[in-house]
Length: 234
Image 1: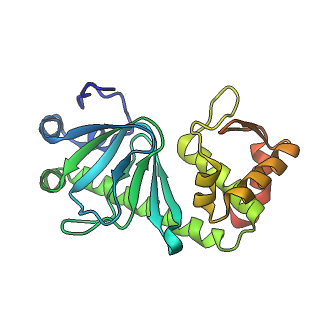
Image 2: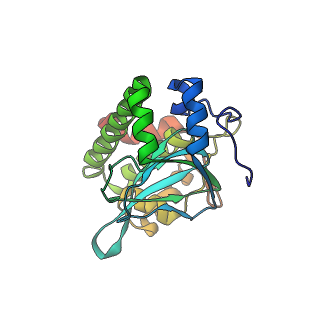
């Protein structure tokens, strides 16, 4: 992961730039972009830092976190290949959240000035990103609304389904494609790591999942949906 991957060589079909920019503009972006390799737990950008551009995930996974009371971390969003980070702000704004790599992750960064030129000359890309922002905001609003109504069991079931929605699962055995700690699942749901461990143990007894170290295999996804179906999840 040390060599820079050019836009034309990139095999990510989810990239908004590749989807909607002309070849001339892809060349211009290629010249201007900065590609950064992060290891798991590296900070991609930090809450309170100035917004200098946006970040496209070329490879890997990330979590977007905010700090609450007593410096408690809350995961407000999960992101993977093709997703955009750092879009909740504009020139001279400061980031209200931080982004942290969950695995070895390659980021393509585009600065504000270049981004402005790209948006002004590629209206289809601009529209696509606006639609992306809208969908992500709506998902977050819906999750926050339901999490205030759910009990602990429902929150953990919803979290497992949400993790699969974002990152997917192995086609052969259903193991989630990302390994989150019990604390990270707690930060995603607003409960404690102990409550997460207890509910995962109950789910395993009921043959809904199988724990594989930090990994989790979903063996009865329908059963998880049953737990949260009254909220319209899934």
